[in-house]
Length: 561
Image (tube, rainbow, N blue to C red; front, side, top):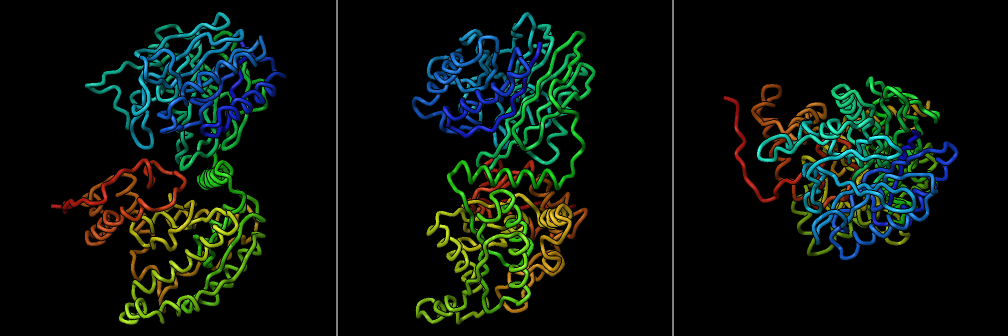
């Protein structure tokens, strides 16, 4: 039995376009004469469709799209495709389903058993679960078809195995039903190190049950999520027979042979280990490219300060959209140094992007001379209000270009700054997309060095990497005058935000006063992050839809005893 895995990039809501994309992959696969082609979870609707699922007529349209697909497939080909459905669930409800199509019609509709409701997932809001998993017979082979989370039973962070849920293990049920092969349709978002976690997850199932495992994953960016693909085929010994390309559409075809052996028919092998920075860069590029493309943008605009953050954001944008579609604005004030302007210009030349210098001093002085505003600024020259004003003038200049030309405005702040509020609402936070929002400062530096290494030259000027970070909003201003050293800040933030450690636990490694200061800044700047542009999720705890903290709250953090 020959099975094709179709690693595809859908557009959420585009039922006609997604159907055509799937049929194009069917045509590509025809050279290998597969018996069955498998597409990802909720492929027809795109994942995640969110509250489109609540809009009257949307799920019905998905069911009609499945029926239409059935009439357009080659008679000899079976198809497993994910989609939302009203079929097989109580009236008025929906299910997360995979339909098995063969012979011009839907043969079976398979519902997802485990509905995740943690991090960015909210599936219990929309779907009802299947009560159990059953094997499906196709071409006289018993197939253990299941959907994404059904394979994550007992994994850290899930609670399906705990009271009062006590939900049975879907993969165990399929094994008990004498499945010859496990097939998992997924839309599993990227997080750093998650591709390896998935391999280990599949190996645990194979080790426990002695069956081969096929995993097909969505690829592409949808809003703040990036899907990395990395679909794979694993034989009954737990050996990865092949892994499809990361961060790109791909097709893999495999033959199921006796004894649980899988023979690859396409030119794929087990993936070589990848550097962390390679995954981060590919995720950022794909996330920005797809957000722009799927939202109707062709070009982007951003401020270039000569610093490391805007430099890395511009380099990512040049890869995502092409250098000619990236427009950089240097926006010097009276406090800007000559080397910052020189670094911004050098970066633009090396990237090949559009570049313009727009001095903001005249605009700044106009505010200072305005009677109602100038008095406030004069009372504390160079103070916080004056610094934020400069950032907001810059944000207004970037947004004006965005409005005038229809360009996507990019915010360039990193996770370290956003965590502690070292950023200005309606200033450097202004924009339609926040490219680096889930990268700590240390990761921004690492990515800059990786970009230079890959280019074989200083694509990002060396001085941007080595000079002390500064917002240059006041004389002789440096980030470290306000913040702890970035290595310390990032380590504390990783503990507080990504690991949810307590102040007491972190105070065993860092000064208590520093930890409490960072924690207080994280808590009281939640209101800023609620207003930030969407960014690309790269970690297990990104700011955005997966981290839901109150804005108006008070908690007295404990101190070590």
